[in-house]
Length: 264
Figure 1 (cartoon, one colour):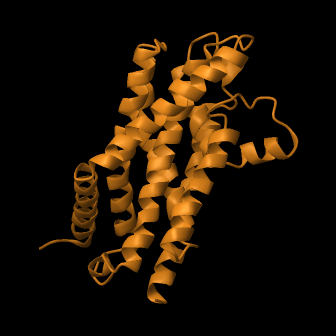
Figure 2: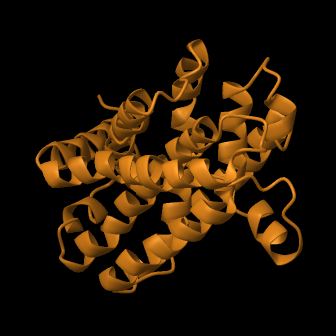
């Protein structure tokens, strides 16, 4: 006899497999996820490195590469979770919502599946790093990749929170980009934020991506001379804040999304 835990686990795996299959069958999406970081690191990063990175005291392109790893994951997860709005409006997921499984299982399964596409985007980052001869840091980049599931959880939870308050698919498409872009520019993904003050400093310190990027850099630069110049917080602080964001966003977002589904 199948227990409740087994039923929920099977549901999550089935939903995740469905999302991965959709990603594989949509090569354009896979290509875009790879090309996007290439454009930002190769073109924008190269230009910034040539014009402003001389006095930083560390390799700017390496600094940006780590930020773009986290940003790429956030973009993929938020976009993937936002697609639930379109699927709901087109009645493509009604069989899920009438099935005897938890809404949390549906959301988490979707999050796991969406993580696949976002992690594929890391291939583009590694390619541009090799082409531009950006130091990958040996085992440090491996350690960084090992903790990327943490960034998937936080990015996915932010996507859940977002779709909990959005009803229209067009609004979701535009809003997901408006959710990602400010974080990319204000969280330290592309430029250092150690000295940000006032409104910019406040915004930087309330954005989830800030703490994910800081944890990524603390892992990558651990044991190096650049650590104190680049890392903002203790890694345990980053983890605690990330855990708080994940719990609040997931619980509130799922409750709001479920309520809007019932009110349709």
